[in-house]
Length: 321
Length: 257
View 1 (cartoon, rainbow over the protein chains, first blue to last red):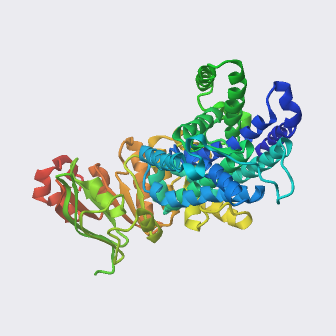
View 2: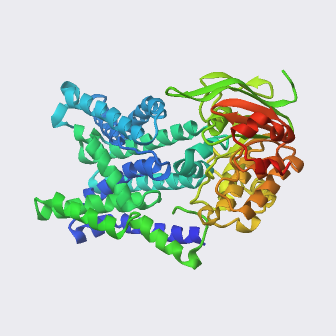
View 3: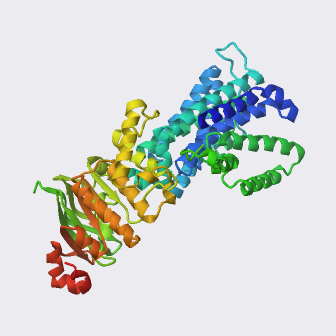
């Protein structure tokens, strides 16, 4: 019964999103901003899997996001791959980055995991910043959006539907993962890792796979983000960017499937609307965050779901929506 | 090596900085026995326990399980081999229900914890049946759908025992199973521990403070004091031991024997 309610609610959300090209002019938001919401949500999901579900402070996920963007940008500019190729190479770059970092990150827990994540992310940031000849350094690099199969141009409307398809596909995959026995074990690791090990499970193996899924998700988001703005710049890799992803996750609801979209929507749309009104937009956005966190201590969706569950009629054994 | 030995430690030591928490301790736990480790506060009981269960490794000495060395084996592998343990403060997943807690272990044992799809049909029924069986054993069936956080301390302890049984161990290590329990709850746990051996045929090693519990359950007792073995023997031998009496046992406690 609950699964059906979620299916209906999810269907409604996706239907509203699909009408984005018609709805976004009504709120004076460019369609590309709604695309940005969707690709950013992928990066927020990647943080959510590690931090919201597994309890690992993923403070460096911008590294995978930036690897995705630079992977797409560099392959489009220098290898002249098509749109699909750029997405694949960008995502694969992030996965490769995850494969290299995971063995080191696995050895740390808690705040040390967070600090190590930041440190590794900054390494990528400085490479992009300093390797001026290839990456354009501080100025970033722009590149024309590649055609699909070298023929079909992707305009903003088509790009929006590409982003929507990627988002829906990843959301379904994400939901499948967190609801599976594997995902339940990740939640158990967050709550009490020692006990999970004393159930005879090698928690490192679970965390390793979670790290790779997370890197891939962030990489896909980054690759699409790079292709959306036809630009890659070092700040995408920076720890500030990682911080924004964490912020969006908290805003939406840590450990909830749809929270990543809620957080990304409020941050990206809020930033767009407020920044066109005032140059002090960061002040107002900061105020909005404080208000949200005070009103919704478990994130917007997390708090609403908890309130729903508090009603006896909605009693069920799944602790996370 | 004696084949009837379930778990053996030889000359195990563990230091923390300059402090010798466990100093050259040897112990042999016979298959099918209930063995207790006792000693005053700070005697190194829990530290010793942690070296046996691989929570951390000893600085010197050897630990063997059924004759094979496990001194530096990862703790999760020891569980796969057939060891189970509980902690002094019940180590449970407080935000999950009792059923979900036990299910985690049942899934781990069935080798399906890593899967993306939960088993369906008969496979699922077999897992649910196993959960019911374990909860029945610790008499927690009625609390199945309650959150563990809502249970009493004793209930959480029983849930933890059910979890440690879910991996189908041959040997269970219980770290102060009565810590923080009311007298009535203590009796429930005593019955369960007795059943571990009588009904399930398990070997039990436990650390305990409560002398009434130790003397009514244990067949063999190892006394630790300041990190060293002070004495080892049957309850009556330990009760009669002058050194143990002088070192820490109250006379009243021994009058029960």
